[in-house]
Length: 597
Image (cartoon, rainbow, N blue to C red):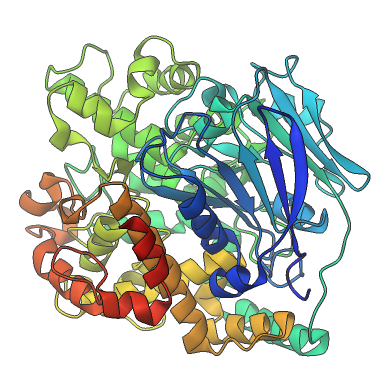
């Protein structure tokens, strides 16, 4: 079976049953792998009656046909589940080496069911698959667990949760290769609820190619494009993703003080340039990645660690009005070791700071209090003191304090570091994202700021929906291959389509590949509709709709209303955001909808 390994591993933690099932090739063709395959499997297995932290929820880990092939950034895998933070369909993907090793262990996907009666870890090796007692690992940090289980990026790769996942922090991450994270939406809490501490993989099976020579030629062309593009060949390797800090600040789209402002006077202190100058040690790369955007940094006498990248530097920096780079970086280190999503952690702390300043939360947290940052992050991971209050995320925190409007989230997922008042298309993206406030579901930064593939007016409203839709569909495909979004900065969709066709022997013209992304997007929409989400959930926090921005976007608000109408029309959905029968028929989803009735 070219591209796919042809096998799905199913583990029932309640009974310790481990079995292998054949991959449904027709479903694989329609949904590719990774995010798409995960969404299709989740649709069948987890309905609206299932609580995300109950044994009935499943955890699906899937690579894609491109994973492990050596194609640029073909190291990634996707984790799919029902989110404990949002209640939506959730996938979170991660890079490093673990995804490649899992694919080479001989499987396309792993389905984890039910709950173990006591802590366990799963070991997948060439000579078999087994569950082992993990009582001695429970309570250990990510680095401690990884070391105890023999993490070796070139042979034996460890995926695990830290104390945050064990303690069911609703934005707990799943970590792999010590510092890589599948973080958003709380997959670590789902893993913790199942008493599953870790998954260790070994394997050296090779992926078969339908036309290896043609595949390698497309790979060669893609390499040239990545080397020629100034972002992927210079900006990201030298400054990491935090190169965006000064850029976003300059245009007045850097959210500051829990989105009260859109300009941070001290952005330079936590920028990519500052990181490179003051604390950068190295820029290692994930497997098969020529970009090497990772930041290996060092604070004082500590051992080198990873981070911060842009979102993290913003979340613990500008969002909290903190410009102490060392404090921001160490907060990142703590998140890595405890297993926390840095975006939700920092944004929830920023929300708590505003609640405290308004007298709605009894805590010493205040904007700019770098001295309280590290302890607060640690307390969240262990759910103690104020950390226990914050461990539910900003939406529940703000609602519990009587001010739900102060949570800067969409569908309960904290928004990342782009102010929709200064980036109109990004605001529409946040509002319509199937997993909540997320930039990785069709980021508009390229078109609205960087001029990729061409520059469009960031404050323009009319016509933005078509760009967002195209980006969302393309993003769904990349998450299903599974490939890194950064490769797509330089390598057009056409080349991924050519590579996929050569790999699998199945013709995927560019348009058909993007149509596959549209199918995945609509399936996720159907999942959320089945869960009870409506048009009312496709919105932004009131602050962004009513309170003008500052800086070089001064006076602007998000004009979401007209964009949303245009978006639904462009999607082939009705005025309530429900896919019309003709669209479902076109995408081959009519039978699934019939099951809802």
